[in-house]
Amino acid sequence: MSRTSKTRYAVLGMLTHGPMTGYRLREEINGSVGHFWRESFGQLYPTLAQLEDEGLVRRTGTTRSDPFELTDAGRGALRTWLAGEAESLTPERNELLLQLFFGREAPPGVLQGHLRRHWEALEQARSRYAALEQLVLAQDSPDRTYWLITVRHGIALVDATLAWNADASALLEEDLP
Amino acid sequence: MSRTSKTRYAVLGMLTHGPMTGYRLREEINGSVGHFWRESFGQLYPTLAQLEDEGLVRRTGTTRSDPFELTDAGRGALRTWLAGEAESLTPERNELLLQLFFGREAPPGVLQGHLRRHWEALEQARSRYAALEQLVLAQDSPDRTYWLITVRHGIALVDATLAWNADASALLEEDLP
DNA sequence: TTTGCCATGTAATTCGTTACATGATTAG
DNA sequence: CTAATCATGTAACGAATTACATGGCAAA
Image (tube, rainbow over all chains, first blue to last red; front, top):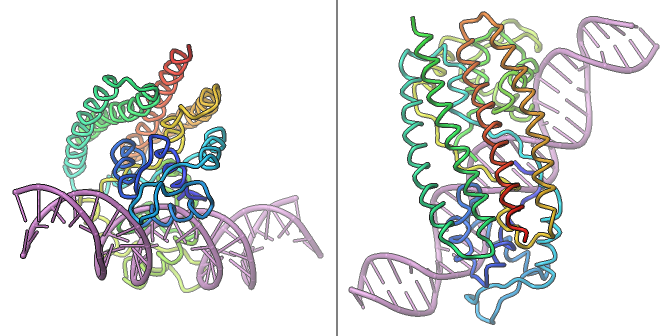
């Protein structure tokens, strides 16, 4: 868990793409950076209210469903965060790895099964990334390079994990006799 | 955040290596699987107490500082978990990627700086993994293969991330003019 | 007119970390 | 004797998800 929430920067950042309602904001976030950053309403709305209080964000109109836009202060806060160093992420808990680590206790075969299912999930993720990459490459936006970089990250990790998965399966096989 | 805590399985699993106190347990966990699973005392002790209540774990002696050992029920619970499918992990939030995604708003040069520092951290992680791998390879334990698999996972991810980092830097350079 | 989507919010709950407090034992 | 390490626990806090509740509006 992060020491302090970064939800605000996801919001401020997305609003550089134009005014949006909270609802839309969440769709955009989970749609575009969903592979490494997701937001829930329970997190989003309180954050949005706080940003409004702090004057980093304002409604473009007067009704409750008018979209929000970035204020100058908001853009400033975003740039300050961008210039700062990201908190190094604490190692993520990986349940599959934990199972493998204690694999000696597992009935024979189940680990291979786990790896096979994991492989299939990875393959699916791989195709989603491939499609997303094509989409980004077809873009003509000043953001294109930045978006491409984040997609390539996902691809790099999935490919590495696929290779590892195959390696792990082979190691398990060798170990059987 | 995971739906239900898996701390208990880290504990039960570690106790297959022999009786241990809570203190020791935490050292062992953070030492051996620390690259993908860490525990804090605030999490560990209550979990241990609960496991004792459920009869999955018992003190080897009568004093407060006697180590815990696995009961038959505990080993059974561990095996049941091992046979089941791991919860698929929700995509981890990655602050650096978020910064890169909104990179258009960043002052020129800072992103390259972020990537360079990230590179250096990765290099350090890489050497730690290399050392750990040698350690595991030198082992002669029935667990060796399983341990190796988890170390290789770390290596695969770090290597992939290093390659991506270089790629990202290059993309940013191209984008400058 | 009713189904579904857009939109906003809150409450309950869970997970987890950090900080704090305490005491026993051991090494110097 | 005293500092470090081993050992146990709790309290405070924060992040985040899930579920729930509400209402407007548009299309079928």
